[in-house]
Image (cartoon, rainbow, N blue to C red; front, side, top):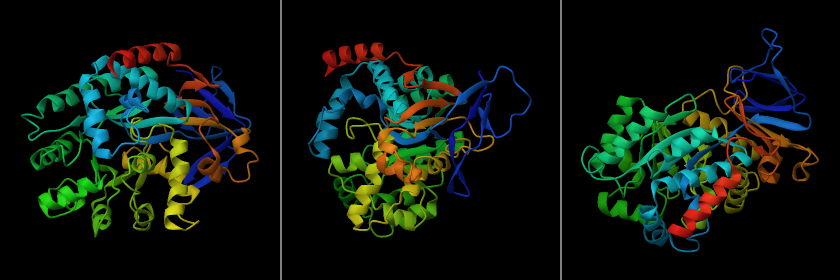
Length: 424
């Protein structure tokens, strides 16, 4: 592994939860960030980051990466139509190998727009993990679990999840238990997932309170909101990641805060599917850990976290009629250090002594960011992702000077075109 000395850059880090800009030199040894050179290393490569912001890689906390095949495929239809009549039939008919190329396409977009780590819920055994390994991205991967009983009708997927973990778990690829939703998983299965997560020391994620239909159906079936339902069956805890949480009622947010669970907001997907706008200001006021996800490209239709960051702040300012709502520093933290807290992985989401070298280099002379009056604001309100010059994951460049180093762009395009022609 090549060691690096990064000089002349403007470094963004977080100290005591506050963003700090500095001109320090970074030393990357064996994939780890250091602030001092240690022993002299003649083989260390110097990286001149002049006119660059050197910052933590962005962390996309909720994706379905394989859905790039369905980008712009099922637009402008109601959520129930989108999910059950458009997306699911395609998923059921795709061969597993198609998901590998769909993931590679997703990772091209993620890398080029500064994402170094993603949390995925997938449908096709091995493909997400294999593609992430080949692309060199950091990943938290979960096989979508559904059914009545984890050890009976739900067992094949659970077995696949365990086999994936056995085959692929590494320093950069981790696994997470992923029951799909309360409407696709029984109470029994959700309780079983909680038991297995505790036994295996794994995080768990699920979609929650995404639509009005889900909310109303839960109240009719159980006499309580989806949040209260998960609390009562023992699913909510500090190792739980909740995607969406748009339809919050009553004391839902207090329950989530008390449980220690994290929320991933997906503002573009929620708006596009007509599901609403999550109450982010109230989440922030209550001190709930909120992270940012794009969701899949079938609903967003982008995997660009810079786009998501800008939308998140602007939509909430407009929705709350408050220009001070959800400021830029909160947004940048949500895409970096908040995510590291939710993942229980302090080595990512920051540039600090001993952190993993998941770093992106942002061109401060890009027209969209110039002049550099307020760098934190520019990341939220001005950046569009094209300003990302280079990306490093775990101390290895996966893109350098705009050149993808781990993905064959033309091969991906060829395979995706073939798959779309034959299966969509």
